[in-house]
Amino acid sequence: MKLLRVGTAGAERPALLDPDGTTLRDLSCLVGDIDGPLLADAAALEGIRAAADAGGLPVLDAAGLRVGPPLARIGKVVCIGLNYHDHAAETGAEPPAEPVVFLKAADTVVGPYDTVLVPRGSRKTDWEVELAVVVGRTARFIGDDEDPLSYVAGYTVAHDVSEREFQIERGGTWDKGKNCETFNPLGPWLVTSDEVADPQALPLKLWVNGELRQNSSTADQIFPVAEVVRYVSRFMTLYPGDIINTGTPAGVALGQPEPKPYLRAGDVVELEIEGLGRQRQELKDA
Image (cartoon, rainbow, N blue to C red; front, side, top):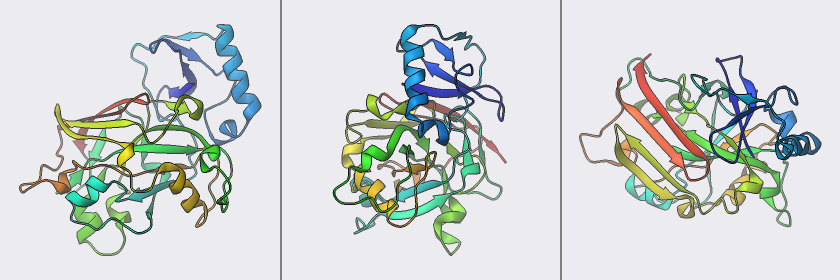
């Protein structure tokens, strides 16, 4: 299923995208929202599937309807850095021996077509297309004999917007360059895991002002999705509705020759992951 949330910010309603890829169905008659408790409730999800198969869900008029983040009340956003071989190479970094883990605040999450704000004083705002994993059941110390993907409810597209000066040149951790307002557009859909046969076979692309900047596949990840989920569960408990951004491939502004083409107000970024949908954001000054 492709689950999403539509409506004005803070007042979104749950919806379902039909297999035809164009028709929206209203789920508010069945569930209150798309959130962690829903994803952990197998019976509720099966109820959505049954109603969709029966064809009786009301149609939503998509014209002019804002698409919000596909998940409400996100607990935490866990991020993995330097997780693609080609991205590590372009930045001159050695591939890490263990996953690089940092956190983004949940309030950085906005809709896939919402405005992204260039922070005040920013000179190095950068783009990063990423596969986001949505947790569906509580994960603590996932064992070697368990399948980490069984803890995954689904997948979506994340734009891990980053301010490189804040991140790298201002001391301390990466968090200062990762947690600016609007720095994690998410969606458009939460695609349930049964529709993603192999999370290591997903092409992902990003364009800036129509120019292709990132073009890779999750097959290039240093630490595959299953390994990332298992690893993170050994350092923090993952709850339904938590998100893991699994890293970005080569092609970011940081990896380009001088003058590096960092983002400015007026730029338009578009990004997509095959089967998971496409985003578009216009940048404005904060």
